Length: 238
Image (tube, rainbow, N blue to C red; front, side, top):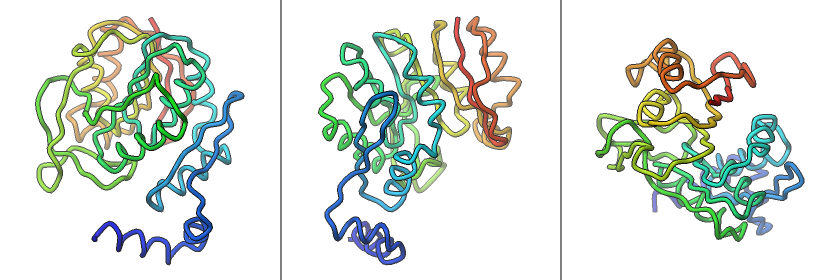
């Protein structure tokens, strides 16, 4: 009931969102690199993000760069609505893509988007990728800024990347938990990473210096792709 009331409130506050619901519109179509990706929405924020992605306003340059790197096994860590993993799976139908998303609302949205795009080579796991195997409390709001909390969240399993088969391409967008993901990685590979500000990193006991130390330990070379003040995108490669 709470979710239903929240959706009704969002619809009444946003005429465009309300219009989409009343007209029966179920998804936005994103054209990128010759592909047409369908992104559904069940909340106002998912609607807004999918719409902006359809207009090429969100990380289009990074997404296009990601799609140029060929790999057989691919991990999208911090999937949100799944666009990176879904676009990759659609472009490379022989590749195996796993999307990791610990937020339940986002996880369900990714499931819907995988089904909407008819992808047999893409799956999603409700897991927080970290440096150890265990359980955490994770906030569950369906936003892109969800995080580990001390109370009020839902239990979510954590696994290091070493638990999974070796990937040849990884995307990391985890709102400051980059260090935990990198410490759970035991081999050099191609990575697209969003490096967040010191404030975000500090929530997980990291600094930009500790991140770069781990990058060096993995024998990875960084290439700056974009600098957006609060975060930078890098391509890390062996």
